[in-house]
Image 1 (cartoon, rainbow, N blue to C red):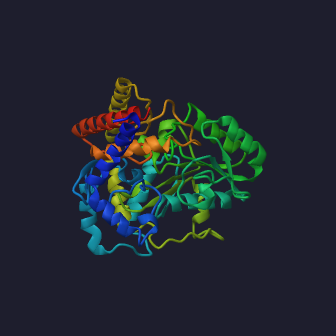
Image 2 (cartoon, rainbow, N blue to C red; image 1 turned 90 degrees about the vertical axis):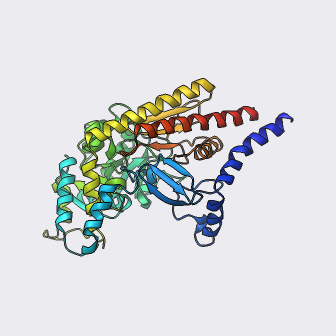
Image 3 (cartoon, rainbow, N blue to C red; image 1 turned 180 degrees about the horizontal axis):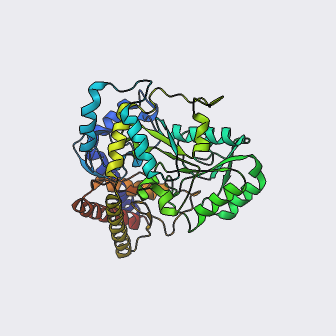
Length: 433
C-alpha cells in the first residue's frame, strides 16, 4: 500500500469504528435534523460526523442508544458534579414531588437553600434565584447597571457567561458591543487597566470567570483576579464573579480559593443538583435594589425562580459537595493529568494538559493555545472520536472534569482509555506525515 493510501486508511479507521459502534445514533440524528437545526438544540455537545444519542445516565456513566457505555468526563457541561441520577437527589425529589413544583410564594425549602448558599458564599448577604446561569448573569449585569447608573460591562475576550448578548461579546467570533460591552485579555492586568483607563467612568461591572473553561482551559496567573478586583473598585465598578463552573474549586467556591471578595457572585450549572437553577448572591447594598419593600424596586420576574424541585435538588447537591469530596476529585484529576503526560512522552506526541483542581483541557498541541486561539480542529476531532471509541466521553474540545461519584477504579478506566485513544491518534498522524 502506498504511503498516501496508508494515511487515508488510518484516518478513516477512527471514524469508521465510530460509525460502526453508533449506527442507531446516526439514524436518530438524521431524523433529529428534520425537526431541529442540525439535529441539535444547543451549541455545546455537537461534533462531526454526528453526536451520540444518549439513552440513560447513572453515576459516572452514560449509555448511548446502541448500548455502548462511556465514562462521562464532561457531565453535561459541568452541570452534574455528582454524576447522573444521584441517589440522594432522586430520593429527595421523590419525597416532595407530590406537593407540586412551583408557586408564587416561598417554600421552607427555598428559604433553607438560600441560607445554605449564604453559608458557603462568604462575600454575600442576600441571594436571588433564577432558572439558569445565563439568567443569573443577565440579572447580575442588570443589578450592576442599576446600582452604579452606568451602561458598560467589561469582560474577557473568549470568556463564557451564558447566552446573554452583552456577555457573549468576545466569544464565537463576536467583538465588543458599542455602548454595552468592552473587552480585555484574560490574564493581563495591563489589558484590563487600559480598558478601565479609557472607559472606567462608564463601567458598571467587571465580570470574570476565575478559570477560563470554554474553548481553552486557562487558569488565572497568580494575583490576576485580585488585582482586577481592586482595579474595578478604584474605578467605581462592581466586581462580578461568574462561579457557575468553578464553584467546585473549594467549599466556598473560587472566591475562597483565590481570596476574592466579589460584590456579586452568580452561580448555575450544578448548583441545581441536575435541575435548571441559577443564583445571584451579593452584598446587601447591591442586592437591596431588588427588595420589593423599597421605593422603586428593580423589577425581576421568573415563573420558576426558586421553585420547590430546584431548591430541594440544589440543597442536596450543595450538602454533598464537601471539602473531602473536592480534594478527592482534585487528586483524581492530578493522577489522570500525570498519566496523560507520561503517555504523550512515551509516544513522542505533542499533547498539552491545562488543569486547575478537578477540571482540565487536553490539547494535541505543542504548547497551550491562548484563550483567543482555537486548538487544531482536525486533531481535536480525531482525539475526541478515538476517546468515544474507547469508552470515554470528554467534551468535543478536550474538556475534562471529575465528579464526586467517580471511583478510583473508574479513574483506571479513564487512564487506559486515554492511553488507547492517544495510540490511535499517534498511528493516524504518523501515517499522515
